[in-house]
Amino acid sequence: MSRPKQYDNIDGTGEMSLGLMVLGFALLSYLWGVLPESWSGKHHPVGFLLLFNGGVGAMLGLIYWNAKAIKKHITWPRTGYVAYRRDRKSRWISFVAAPAFGAGCVCLMEVTRRHDWISLQRMCYLAVWVPVYAFWIYRMERHHPWKWLVLFFMALGLLAIGLIGPGDIAELGRPVGLFLGLTWLGSGAATLYLYIRHTQPPAPTTE
Picture 1 (cartoon, rainbow, N blue to C red):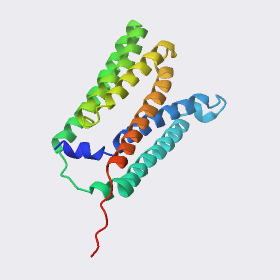
Picture 2: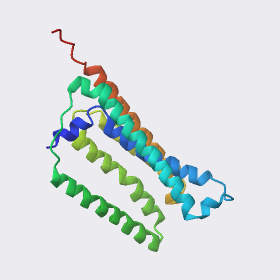
Picture 3: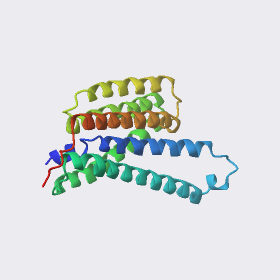
Picture 4: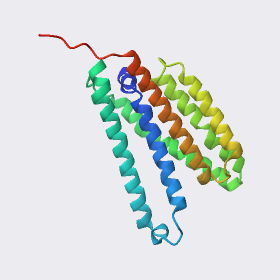
């Protein structure tokens, strides 16, 4: 049942989609920060919703069409298309794990806010991305051992951002989002390059 997940990212589209998503949220945060305070929409929920929904819609459209174009023109002609049965157990685990992870992050931020543990809050926020990507490599990228070097690069980059980045979590999230988005996007693009290099489309048969 885990093979469909690995095949889905055999061309790097899954990793590129994650990178585009994180990069999109980071760019939205930067855009919101540079908007002038005189703009009325910045102080009204409608303005925020319009900017957020428009940005997220464009981001999801880019993710969908990028993955679809790569699958249609590169992946499926080389290694084929297979419609697998959906694993309902995995879907329920995902539905339960995501809210639990979010609730845990909120509780951690609330505890650090009350005790004013800014350094602990920064450390936890930066450190959580390393095991997340390590789990991704273990589940999806075991056939690409060079991904562990990407993980090492990510850990060094997050450490550097933690040392020189701004103190507020909201401000820190912007460079972290840009760094993670570009790293995942680059890693996915490298996976696509290796896939194209080592997987040739079948030769056309003559009838």
